[in-house]
Image 1 (cartoon, helix red, strand yellow):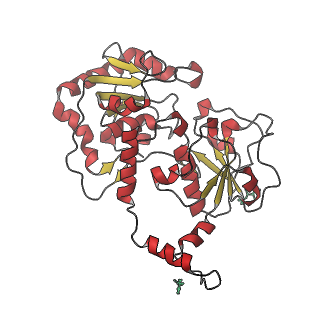
Image 2: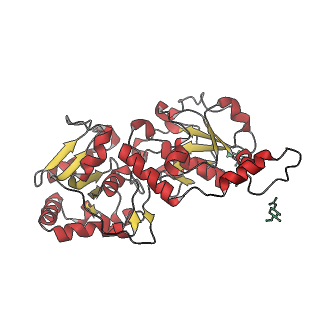
Image 3: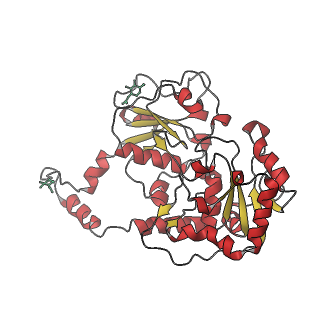
Length: 355
Ligand SMILES: *[C@@H]1O[C@H](CO)[C@@H](O)[C@H](O)[C@H]1NC(C)=O
Ligand SMILES: *[C@@H]1O[C@H](CO)[C@@H](O)[C@H](O)[C@H]1NC(C)=O
């Protein structure tokens, strides 16, 4: 966790070094009297007043965090995030967490809605794991989801770099294939991946971790454990377009080759270069996949080719504490609201979401 924090912080710092000009400007403006102020274009304090207010109506799953984390982890600081409902009538946007909405809609924000205000539908689960609460179809202005065609699309992305990185050193490995499984509830759609795993594990040794098994990993063991495996099973719980989660980001960030099960390879390649991962659909069956993994285990040169992308792309470790599950989504919404003032209605969200 600390390592992840340090890495992501240093990436943010590297990309956005603090400007030397800013502090003096701020000081100069502070010294001006209110009346002599000539609305300077680059005033920090004017900019602060202009920041749109984003009201988080309920904390998703009650996982609270400091709003300053948006700046700390993602350098996002262009809106005023709040959970103070007394700011409702003045809020530019209100974010409503789908799973927090009661079936009778009684806990939605009040009407009438201020005419300038936009409501954001916040939902990160796949359709398989989504309950259709009736009455939400035409209430919102913006959708926020893992889907690329959502108004606000949320995901960890690889960053391009202009100056090639020097040779990436593959971390030391003492395990072949690993898999962390925290959810094994059949109702969440996991049967496809379980079936594949059952068959695969007959042909290759898979080391299991996670809540669903006895070997529970603590948070600070997550990245080091991933690093120590040659391959990691990035198996999504349900299969939907764009539903490509932190399950692939983890191994990419840790220096491990992801073996993915999810939407088709082409969909993955919208976000991750094709030579950075292995897709189960590249193989006729789990047995042929196992044979290929054994082959790569013996052929270090071929194995190391899976890290060539590291020269021009940089992964970012995602936040792994449970209470941090929604940090990226909420910060992304903040940034979006600050950059987009357009009028927008989101109609028939279920039509869009389920079809
Ligand atoms: C603000 O910007 C405009 C146009 O860019 C410029 O003409 C004006 O002098 C600037 N005002 C201040 C106070 O810097
Ligand atoms: C937001 O959407 C609602 C419902 O469609 C609509 O009535 C309202 O005018 C929209 N507001 C803005 C600011 O886009």
